[in-house]
Length: 56
Image 1 (cartoon, helix red, strand yellow):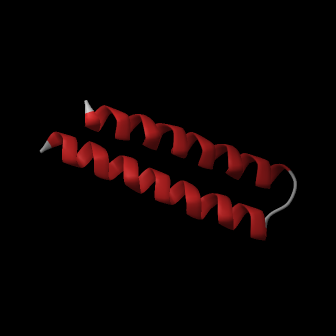
Image 2 (cartoon, rainbow, N blue to C red):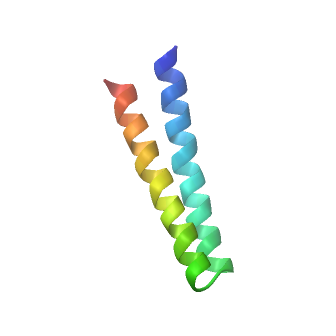
């Protein structure tokens, strides 16, 4: 049961990263775009790690 929640959180973070990076590229410029892209990258990495943990 716990692995299910870990995997769902990982999937949610990856989806949120995709939406965030798309939104950042179309709406913002400059340093705000960089910060939002960095946050999206962190979400993607954490989501990938959680997905890997749920496999183990």
